[in-house]
Image 1: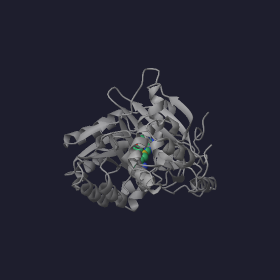
Image 2: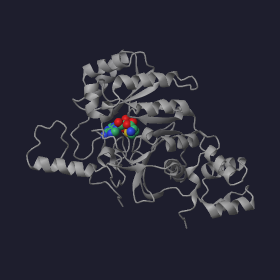
Image 3: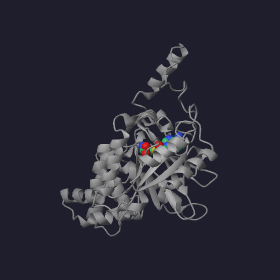
Length: 393
Ligand code: SAH
């Protein structure tokens, strides 16, 4: 039985586990062995760690535990995409998605319970925010996926890439994020190369600066608009860190000499008649000039009560062509897992909202009902609850 005093071994990067072992008088190299057992072998009991001394195993039995989140539900989409709903100790739940492709398998990992940023086109934002995930809860998603994918009926699948594009803003959960990233790239744990581990951010500028100093990963930035007026509306964080500041920081990030980063991936959600005109594409091409860039166009994934629509395929092609003609590499992201609400921006989990987002929506609803809100440009749809939010089993 877990007890409050036991430490969860999944909360430690290799460095942190070495420190822990030092403080309890154990040899630091034992940490490397334990990390291998935990993450390469996926053991759930320290007694399976056969190359450790009996004494160390007894110590670990007494003082530690191996506790990943619990799988509350596993779903598989018609296109092979997996989605797991993971229950956390405090009753919240998060979602993790695996996207299989011919030549790779990408795991989309959550970093927070809900999200505090309130991007207007994102369903996670509707859930409000509860708390940051621990290292064990972040790396636990990879730990669980790796084990689950070994029993895929069509044969074992591997996680070859990780994207921090699930629920939450990773850079607002900095220390646990970095520890989990270190495990993903640790040869004794998951051994992924820095090119295959991507942090996606809506642009938390000071944290981006710190990230560039401490770890070498690939970076995706959720831009979504080529000017401040529009981005202020779509990504409210832009009011704090406007585009020019964000771009300056991104240039610095690429220039940091201890790293080998080659480009930034810009994410751009395609919203019908909002940010998808020829002029927007031209503005974007001018804005990013001089920055080594890849542009990732994401067809908007709808969710109940959203005011947005997905741009037509023709519009997306035209937008892409303008950028390609301006010399950019552009990828239009394929929508995967839509039938199980696993596509970008559709992740919901079960968030015990502490940001009072639901109350905020309820107030707006009341105002709308009282007929006072007709001209409010910021007005949200009246019913914000996703019918499928929460534990769906
Ligand atoms: N907070 C981080 C990571 C989470 S979202 C970030 O903002 O980058 C991962 C990506 O999905 C982001 O680019 C986000 O803007 C995009 N996204 C959110 N809602 C979406 C939706 N409904 N349709 C398509 N993409 C969406």
